Length: 393
Image (cartoon, rainbow, N blue to C red; front, side):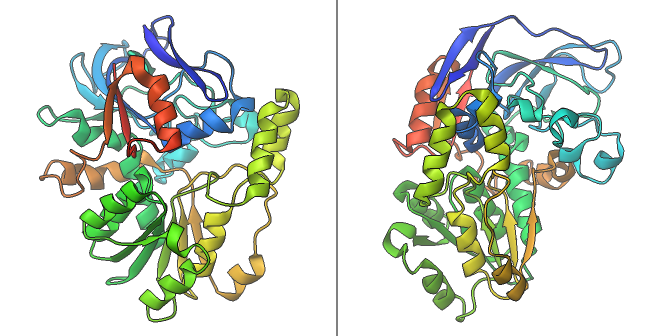
């Protein structure tokens, strides 16, 4: 089959690799019909090379048609249409029972002290072949795949794999009071969708970004926006002025480690890309290599006693945090990988009752799988208005 594989920094290719096969009686094989490129994939493209091997298959936002089922699979049949969550959860352990599917005890990566395994990601998360491919082996066939109805296009449902539950959890964790306000930092795919969900719930939403196309997308949906390129020095003051001088009730950091600014951390990230893996791996895990501009901004912007919800991915272990300010402002912090299966029962009915969140036209680009290398470069450089790219095998 054809699959998108990692070969080095900013070097992804479409290679011919062996087809996946049933390995456990609860496995299913899915023929992929759509697979998103995620902002987290850009971290592999740019930063996390020390935790990848050449030829690793990327991608964790797939959906498709069940092709084959193992002998103990009773909940799915060939021909069923399914979305595959990005975190690999058994659905039956203690953590899954708590709704913490991203901490699944069955697939935790104990070697690295990490949570549940992920499709198409690094050694830290199990190094499981991903879904930017023609076929995908999916474990836990009775509990992991999300069965979706025929009818609407893939665009309606594919974001159940990651974007929708990640954005949904970001809003849930933001704990916005009824009629309250939330500032969303970063209007990439997750921030854009989080803003839509918060708006759908009736909150006042202020989106912050510096990419004109992203600001325009939010503005067209009636969301207030602040252009960071115009207010970089005083953005916190601007937002406080918009919120009675005290700041919004909640802030969602949808940016993460590739935040604008922080040149020192940018250099640290670049240096690790040139080091041998044996040196770079511990440096990435234990050194301060994150660009924390967005998180510092969230701390500044949120009102006293407010909540910061972090959905953007950070990677370093020793980055300095202003704990005096966090404590003094009595800020509540919530964060973590999205627990996909926890939120699906709440999200799926929305997708079957019209399209209030605008999923049908959420993607800016749909390209054949063979064009993945060009699509990665376009998305990484934010060219041609790229906000969300779907690969279609």
